[in-house]
Image (tube, rainbow, N blue to C red; front, side, top):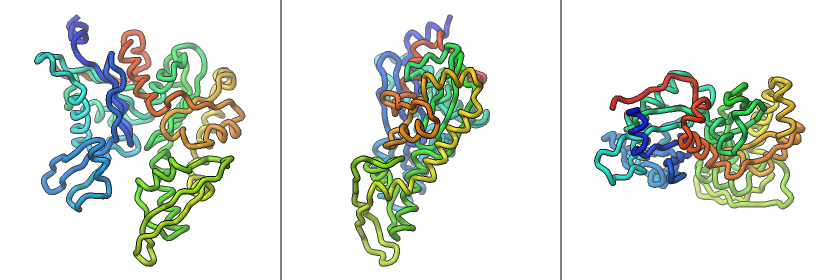
Length: 350
């Protein structure tokens, strides 16, 4: 009863805690924060100087003692204290100060499939330390499926491919649970690295990750494009040490991304091979659903459809799907409680 009373007044939130981006959904208001998962730290004093958008602007542009870093690597917390500060910043940013005695919020956090109990506990502990009253976890592909309004609680197979910044996750969902899951630590960030390495090996040009990401978004593709595109790639020539600009084509970038794209497609094919026949029949009828920022790579849906011989579609607004799904669970917690991660619920003392 006390918990229901608190829930009437608390501003409960759902968080898609991504390697590259953090999205925050507030109950009754929708998504209110969409910022990079980046924190700028003064290493001399240990002081956090900026979080989110302000910290992203500092990447590659700071003195040696100021480091703009991501506290999550491949979807897993690598720096507990910095993650706690980042969560605290986002939670406080969305909390209204109308009432002095507003209860601390209940929080649902999206986490990758296959993370260990220790890693789950670190996410929970960070959220509790950041000011949450109760913390629930939900697997990101499950949240994405709910965000796409798929019938996850029915006895039918749904295959979701969630390609984020740090991980690509392939899951089969039925009856509100994950029947089969494959997780690959190759996703958007790895594709950026591929372009950086390609520039070094092919053109002897040193470029930053931000430049690589801009080129990936601008002309990256998983298959041949109808219209050929080019973009300037600016960096430092590793031979002369001088600035240089080179025009790269979509064919060049496709070659750079080929290995990572192939690994993602092969993981999907393995998941399809291991899916129980009855669920596979449902998937053949419903198709494969792509979500996450990585799913926006041009031609990826066409390539997956060709390789798996099944219809493949990108869900509407794939970047926000996890946050929207976690928000729907937050709005209907009693009805959708079974889709939450099956681990012991932690609750902070009131």
